[in-house]
Image (cartoon, rainbow, N blue to C red):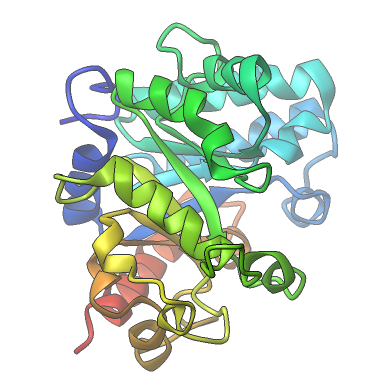
Length: 288
């Protein structure tokens, strides 16, 4: 089961296989201007390409997934998008899953347009999964979810994020007394019913400062893969992970970006940092 198998296997199955083989870590490719400078590269398309392709060389085939942050490619215009296309293609060649961090959220035909840009098999920017924002209403994301499931791809929907501003929206309760976050989790759970690990994932910060159960949320029951920043040596350890994820810890894909990328620019140093981060995250998530 490879990263190119989108049409033959579900994203959830492919992700489970990748985490079983490589551990529960996703490494971000975030060509932030400060990191480009740290690596001795120019803040231009050439520097962007060198940075991103070194990351693919370091991480491809060695971690469960890589997660390019689209914003840092978009800021370079058309040349940056061309680099992003190349990065996604190189990851496919390395048989490594990609999660494109774009946080798209819109309605109707516009949402369908975003979905086709990233989830249609012949799209230049095709990826294995994308991040989505549900705050125009979770149901507004249906065109993206339909296309993802049709083609064996996935999505990760923002549910409980660790930024201070997020709680004001995500913890708010609607007329049915459910929190907004719970409504998002319930929406994912409907699509994942009958699976072991579904293809409609959730973004849940490992350092959200409370337990989802306080909001009536059962993450394990959602059968969702959980993309989780903040796991490992620089973030949440076993006690915090038990509090946040409970029995859903096996579904967590920890996300690390700058913590690993600071080890660059040498490819071998980057690979070692990613492998160390993967061991730390996987050990923390599997601790009893």
